[in-house]
Image 1 (spheres, one colour):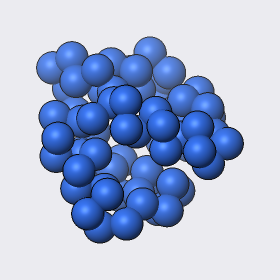
Image 2 (cartoon, one colour):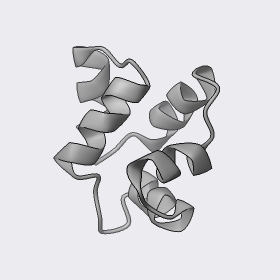
Image 3 (cartoon, helix red, strand yellow):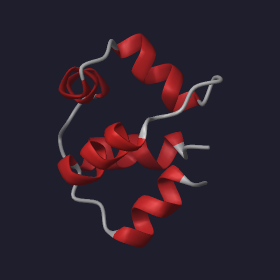
Length: 68
């Protein structure tokens, strides 16, 4: 389960918007928000890896966010 609040905080800290990050991942903002809320779907490994790179997340920090 994704820690949506922690991920939102990181998105904001890097001056991104959820909409911009969703676009970078090739998905709609609606789908991105559903994945943040863990409504029956999760980020794929490929999507999580891209988020980690874009937001410059460290190993433990990334694990805490994506494996909450």
